[in-house]
Image 1 (cartoon, helix red, strand yellow):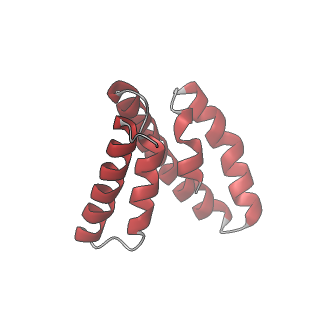
Image 2 (image 1 turned 135 degrees about the horizontal axis):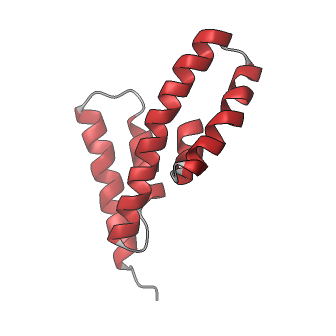
Length: 105
């Protein structure tokens, strides 16, 4: 027999709630809200909030970087490469590197 732990319950509830809220807001990729929630749930509430903040901050930074690089270079594969060469070290310096993967997607 297996046990369902607290983290499992909060992951399931948080994911369902995130998808529901994203649907209420008529977001096209509402399932992404659930995926991000799964990634943000950590062992403690404090670590979950830190992870959420890092991902949010990195997302805002990625939006700015994307606007600049794609606006200047265009939508080419090497543009994302150049963007990442500068984006990743910037997130490390700002201590929001936990948001690199989610922001890059």
